[in-house]
Each structure stands twice: as structure tokens, then as C-alpha cells.
Length: 228
Ligand SMILES: [Zn+2]
Image (cartoon, rainbow, N blue to C red; front, side, top):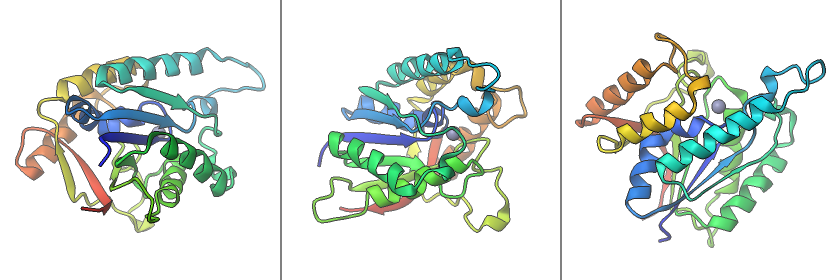
């Protein structure tokens, strides 16, 4: 089994919010870690017709580089799918881009978004990863996990039929500090309490997920598939 972890995230910051402690822990345990961002996470916030401004994208990408270095990642790659408009792209195009990344790094573990988030890009990425990681006989992927993203997973309607009921917990007691160091790189994405992307809420969630599993701090996932 390759000791390779791949994280497929819609936007820079999702990887730290959802699984930063897990990334740091697996990197420490000898996994090589590669992160794919499908978009810049900024374009939808900018009026690109009236005020073309690339500085925000550059700043966000620089934050991603800093965060991923703190977590111990080996590489990051950012694609240019339309921010918060990924539902405007044929799913097959997203799948093919992810397949290239998967085939390049040959991961045994893949982490990606939960299917029921309020953010449309998260949902599209989830669906595309499911297709890209389908268990063909020559598949590298042995473990497929879906993370929660504060300010997206808990903000969807209960009527969407896709609640986040975690059944997989990673103890991040020893890497929680690295998760918070990495979050500090994304200062522009953090908000004051009681926003879900406030430091207090992010820490509270880690403590609650930890308590659920009997440890000081944890990140929670839904297991998509595990081959042993
Ligand atoms: Zn996101």
C-alpha cells in the first residue's frame, strides 16, 4: 500500500478546515501528501468585469502554500474551475482533471468533501471524486473519506437528505497546534465568533469530535470506502 495521501478540495482553506490535523498527522507518520484545489476560492467575490484584480487570488494561493508547508505537505496544485460555479461545468471535465492528479500520485488514501454541503463546488467535487476513485481492479485508492467543512456542512438544509453522520475519527490531539498554525495562514478567511470559521468554533468542533470518540481532539469523517 502506497503511503500517499491525496486531498481534493474545492478551495484553498477547505483542506485545513476539514482535515488539517489529519494531514499533519499522516505527514508525520511518513505519508507523502499532495493537495489539489479545483479553483481559487476568490473569483466569485470579485467583480472581474468592473475591477479586474488578481491580487486576491495570488494572496490566497500564497496562503495555501504557507498552510500546506506548515502541515508537512509535499505539493499543492491549483486548477482554474469557476469559483462557486462548478455546477456550470460538465461533471466529466471535473472527473478527468481529478483522474490525472490521482494517476500522477497514486494515493492509497483520498480525502474530499461531504456530499451535502451548502457550497455547490464542494458537492460537485464530491461527486467527481466518487467517479474518479471508482474501484476498478487497478485502483490505487484503498480508503476514501469525506470531511466536514465549517460554514458549509452544517449550513445546509436538513431537507437535502445528506446529513453529516461521521463514522470515522482521526485523533488530532498531537497535531491540533499545526492545524491552528496553518489556519493562521488563512487569516482573511477567518471570522469573529460565533461564525463557524472563527478559531473558537473550529477548536470547539475539534474538541466535540474528540469527545465523541474519547480523545482530546479529533477530525470527523464519513467513510466512503475502505479496502483491507
Ligand atoms: Zn470551500
